[in-house]
Image 1 (cartoon, rainbow, N blue to C red):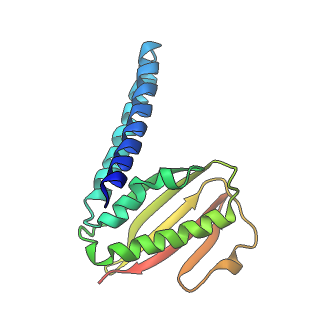
Image 2: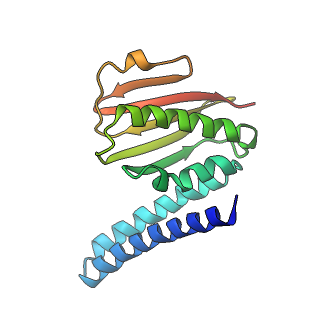
Image 3: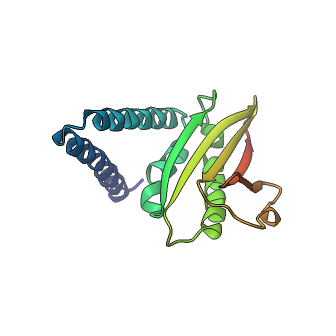
Length: 170
């Protein structure tokens, strides 16, 4: 990665950290200790998920999500890493490719002027199969079953839209 891109990623990461700290500081200055505790707990949970992400030994996959906010400004991302696999290096590039495909579908099926909550889940389906799900909260879409391909499934789950794909791990 070029030095400029690394610095841009660090700048973006620092900006997000400062946002979290400013919110916590604001609640602390108003004496709202319950809100301070809630925000700190939320940020600790976020950092725990980030730790799991960067420890997958899939640097391109981790980098995709670390720079996600700068690529998709109308999505508020959370992710949950629920896999037992600790070395995803063999499928690192494939995971990024599948993420980009899922995100293309999400962007195509959403309004670029709306803000959406996007939850990404990575979990084990079987011993050699991993599932990626991009879940857009409160984004009920109609007639999306026709968009399913052999690789990608797009469906409604309650009021949420789910774009999912399975990846074989060898």
